[in-house]
Length: 158
Image (tube, rainbow, N blue to C red; front, side, top):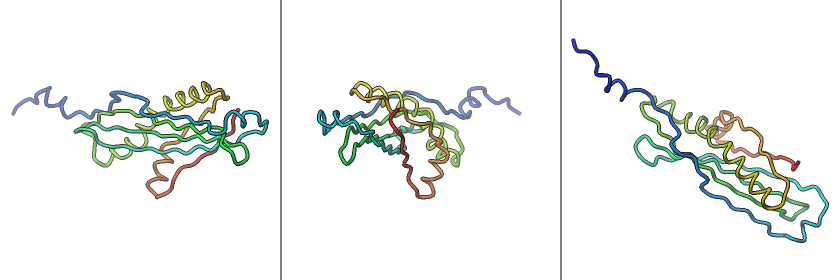
């Protein structure tokens, strides 16, 4: 009877780790400035969210969270900002049935706070009050996407 090699046991331990988090894309448009800035009406704000993932190497995945925020006054766009925050995650020795949930729930939860901060900063730097995106229940979003639905939300400028 042989004793298991500690190296072999370590090679079989589950690994789930964030390797890097980065802002992959950011754009901001103010198509009706400066005239629309003189309109005193309260803008309406629409937020669209999306989560994506792809394998980039064996056991390594890129997960992206994309948010598009559109602020309108009447029928004119005040600003439109879109950001895509990404993370590179290492996942090894994870049961196959758990991988989609990690990619759809745990990874976006890790990346999302960075996206929220980057978008609020971009909007503030553009001269507008910050839009603070609400916390997201990524489990509910994942379950909705699995059922074939989309995720939309609306917020008001503060």
